[in-house]
Amino acid sequence: MVAEHAAQVLKHLQATECLNLPSPHYMQRQYDINEKMRAILVDWIIEVHLKFKLLPETLFLAVNLMDRFLEKVQIGRHNLQLVGVTAMLIASKFEEIYSPTIKDFVYITDDAYTKQNIFDMEEQMLRVLEFNIAVPTPYRFLERFAKVEGANSVMFNLARYLIELPLIEQRMLKYQPSLLAASALYLARKVFFGDQAGWTQTLQETTLHTVESMRSCAKDMLIMLKGI
Image (tube, rainbow, N blue to C red):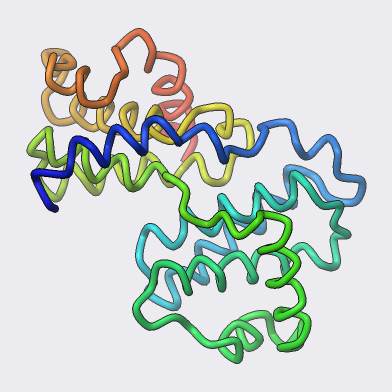
């Protein structure tokens, strides 16, 4: 929103986006949980996010924190939801003006965990992640790319939907956040403008992604969209 700094901020986000990405194969190191359980948990996190009417960025950050933690710590299935709700708590504290309280998060889990359980997991998660919370997410990139594009609210929300779909699929972790955002905007432009949409020189210079570099990611997004 501050035009004179926008390019520099974007350049910094692009330079650091790969520093805090979980491996798409991390679940192979977990002994008691699997990708299907992760998908169910993320789906639940999305419902909680909607119920609390939180900011879009909170959702993307929460999933990032959850994945990065699970990549480093073995978790039993009985504590998987605790990891998810704690990631939501930390993301809410970081992004929201008025974050839900611990009591709210205890309630949303149907009292499956106590306040102390969440406090303890919060401390563990922050230590494991070395308090590294400020990470670039697809939503932040999409905001900037859409502004450069001059996208209206309908196109932006379609692109936003397209970057939310990959949250469920662990295999989509192989794509960096800026690539997900650029691919979503590319597909949204296709929907609005048809085959003539193309990918402008300005967008290529801004996103640092070409049609060729987006092809695989955009194809996977399209498959997910058709499967809804």
